[in-house]
Image (spheres, rainbow, N blue to C red):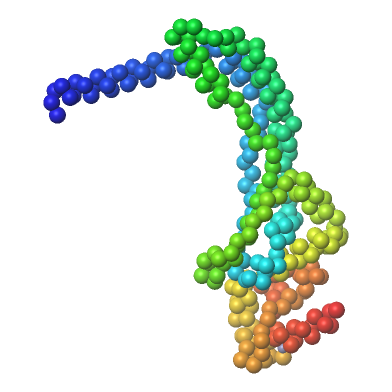
Length: 274
Ligand SMILES: [Zn+2]
């Protein structure tokens, strides 16, 4: 490159840098002296809106088509709302969004009054005033708070093959009203038992669905691929996993509460319980 080219390039860089410096000067001048901006800051301090920061969305992957079909997004949500930490996280976030919802209109009113009163909103004259006005408006738009004022959470259920490849999906969003309703219904309990039938059935479906194919095969392996009652092997009988303490009696889908039964023994066990 020739000397002239270098000269032009360096001039452009210098002009660009001077432009940046002037811009900074305008911005800091406006920040310091703008009555409008200072008043917005003052209002912003009085309204500390909450961020929508809840990691409340739920997702789960089933490896069994039957469970994926039987268990609804709401069933899965109800199951998780049993747990204190999760429930509290959700209820706190609902409270925060409710604060935003109630206070945002008041905030907007105060801002509106401010803009009407603002003396700088008169038509600017002159290049410098126009530029100052431009930067003021830019900073003003930036400093306005736009909080999230509604709450919802999303439940996504996936169906995957044994190799982990997802091939089906369902998804539903829940409003704070719906969630509060579910939380209240969950309060209706006696020990470990939920008295609301809809709630109890939902929790039972999810509990049953916690027997993954992996867990099922681990139970078969532990029991030597034989029915624990009649000792027939998988070569002569259809094996199933059975809850030793039934889910209807508060049993859980844990390794120790599961046993291998053949289809015949399992059916007659259910008949006895009925
Ligand atoms: Zn058997």
